[in-house]
Image 1: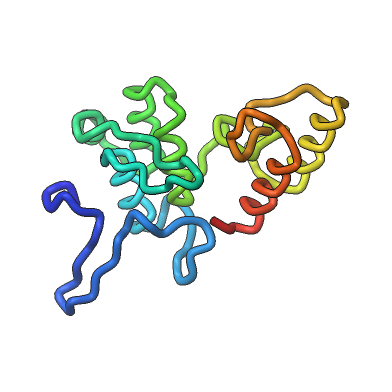
Image 2: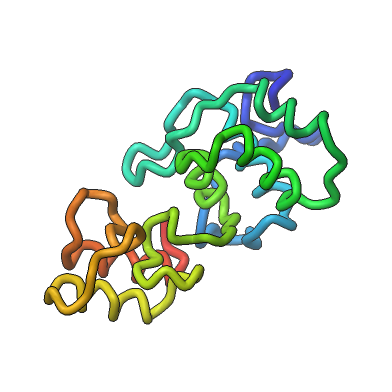
Length: 170
């Protein structure tokens, strides 16, 4: 993809697929870091300079090739997680790269860096909805993940966004 400057893969049969577009809930795709297309999409989103997810703000990363290559070429990794851990050292735990891999259905703890994990237990589930309700009612303190839609306010819209994440909807 880097050599061709395109996230679109072309098979010899003439069929093509843009590996940057699939996200949560995409029919025909498994989720996670063991799916080659998800890893390829994540790497492209970390590399490229185009924020192709204007509506949700996930692909805010534009690190270029140097950091990816340095992490890739300076150690031996057996999994994408090992590669990611080395890469994070270069990014100093920067949020945009974490959002780019999340957009590609790769999720690593601590999830609280990303929207949705309101109770900071490293998973987005129904308990996060309860936490947001408690925050709205001023029964609990806000947490970083509670602002699931990133509008700088914790409100009912966050409940909708967390529900979408739980259901795997884009």
